[in-house]
Length: 82
Image 1 (cartoon, rainbow, N blue to C red):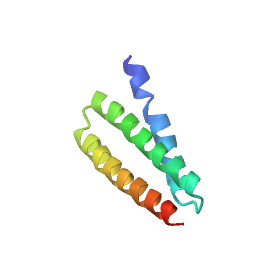
Image 2: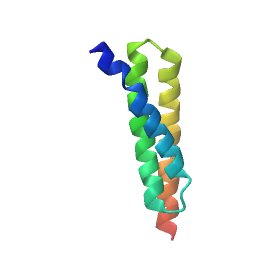
Image 3: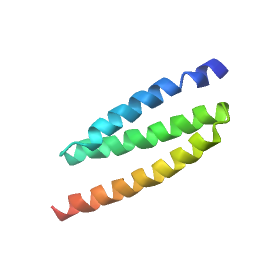
Image 4: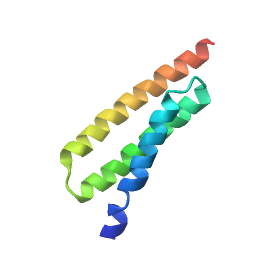
C-alpha cells in the first residue's frame, strides 16, 4: 500500500503541469479543464503528503485549492459576460 501511495506524486506532478498549461489558454473550456486538473492534483498531493507527514505541503495544497476555486469562479463569471 505504501508503494502505491508513494507513486501518487507522479500523476500529481503531471496533472499540475497540465493544469498550468491549460490555465493559460484563451479557450474557456481549456481553462475549466485546467482548474479541474489543479483540484485533482491538490487532492493527490494531500494524499501523498499525508503518508509522509508533510504538513506544510498539505496546508499549501488547501491554500492552492482555495485559489483555484476562486479562479474557477472568476472564469465562470467572465464566461457569462460574453
